[in-house]
Length: 166
Image (cartoon, rainbow, N blue to C red; front, side, top):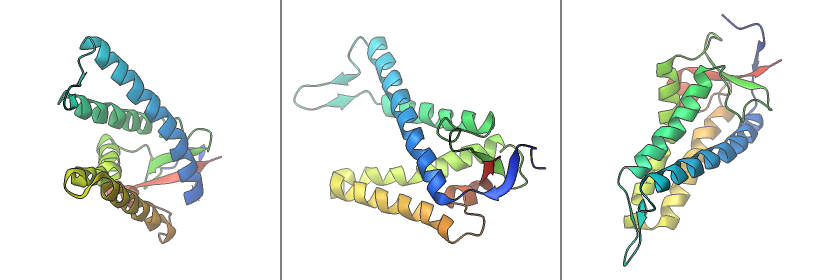
């Protein structure tokens, strides 16, 4: 069942990447607001400095949860993030319907999975970990170049598609 305002035209990879750039700006703003609220709630003790920088152990999981919620809620409410709106694209299930909560969660977790490579930074160095992350995300998106429906790794895992609106 395809909604009336969504065509069956698959979205080219370049349009998805442009929408992602817009979403990066939104995510930065979200992270900054959550950081400010956490600093206010802890009376400026969220990050302790001294001989070594220490961040509260709950802070990074909270940030990840809030960013994931941004994507899941956006995909569940209209199928679009802020970055997808100007590029007129939408996340749908394979049949054109709104993605389920499970599909949205699988999609965000699969897209974020390469971030685990940052755990290699203490052992291999930040430079190597960041290159590994960039290479993995390149592969995640390059899959769309070979798929007839232009699905990325997270679309394949979640059984979703990005379609143009119009």
